[in-house]
Image 1 (cartoon, helix red, strand yellow):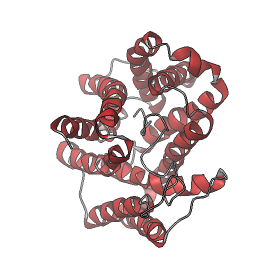
Image 2: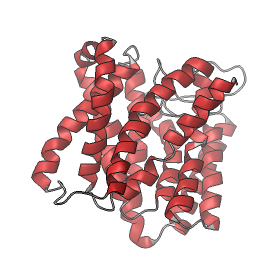
Image 3: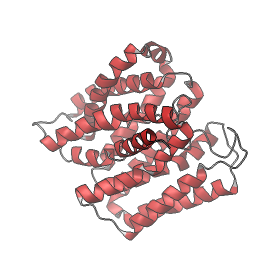
Image 4: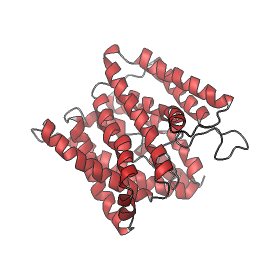
Length: 312
């Protein structure tokens, strides 16, 4: 990998590894709906001009039905449930649980009628990954946090389903346009949600919370997406999927070092097992092509044109 590729890889790993830290800070004073509105609106304001300049918005809007479905399962629901879950779960645990997205991707591929041939290594990866999730949930999460774990399950499924929708119904759409429009739709949806649920803050949030929303929108969403495009252009989509295994490590380190979250033996065990399982379940056998072991939605959040398509 070139020096530029290494810099882009490290920058994207950080940008996609720190959202959990800043969500944790934001929900200490703001309702989850307000957090989603703040980060999606600001990110849309930043990306929409670029999408219009590149003439990508019209093409995306024309495919509004799958676009809306993608937005709901990839941003509207997951961002809310992630923010809600982090009201009780440590940010590091949330980041680790999301490392199970490739495992959910296997199930999504089967449910959507696109079953893939799984090798013994892939099946072993599913088993190892599930053991890791069990270690995190059963041994590292308090019983009172099980509802938050259920919310994280919604996030995991959504993050696995979104790329599958892209791959099946919108493989030709431009990535910047897809993300910009989906963020704008999310903001539009959450304006009435915030208004009618009383989620609007009654006083000005602290500087730490305001900066958290800014970082979530600017760094973790808008800038991260542009870094992703540059990274794929530098090293290709296959190598870029390795970012999956960096993000949870960054999430754990940020939670422990910045927020003082506890690092238990079971956190480490779950971390290793989930990442190992995710690696094995997305590993292609030698000589396999696109119909090989790894389902199209089982790696990092993928889209055919960009390789990775999660804006968070």
